[in-house]
Amino acid sequence: MSIKLFELLLQASIYTVTISVVSILIGFAIAIVISAMLLSRQRLFVLPAQIFISFFRGAPLLVQLLLIYNLLPVIGINVPSIVAAVVGLSLCTAAYQAENLRGGFASVAVGLVESAEMVGMTPIQIFRRIRAPIALRLTFPALVNEAILILKASSLVSVVGIVELTRMAQDLAGSTFLPLEIFASAGLIYLIINWIVALAGGLIERSLPGVPR
Image (cartoon, rainbow, N blue to C red; front, side):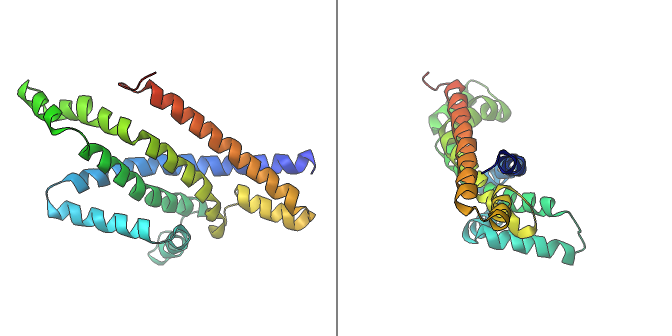
């Protein structure tokens, strides 16, 4: 396989990484809200959060992407394909991240919170200094794993017209009749990207407070 073909795959991988990173960050912001709703004692908040998680964890991502891509124009929202792809990935990963975060917050020892309240800490201080750091430390490996899964799942955005790494590999394999070399190179690029994410995640995890170095 020529260097030019490999460069085309690398260029397409930029779309893969960009879409994935943006979706993961937006999904994390949504997940914080959803997990807070799940931990609320108000049924008004809990029920919508449960429905959200049930749908986006239960329906295949491919179906979600196609639904969002075709639904937005129907309700009068015309957006580029890349926006529909980011929305679909963000909502999907938000459901999984919310469950991870909920488990992390639920694992915070009640005694720690009660002790903080006894010394006069405000709810915001308790959240910022106790609940959030502990929950993040407990769920961080799962969040990194979810990021890797989204990077791989981003190959599905080709169904809405995004030429990312997998779609580029398919196009090149069809035009050059070199499927083995093309897909092997694409797989190698995915492997390197995910290895970097896992390595960065491990370094960040070791820098979190309370984690042995």
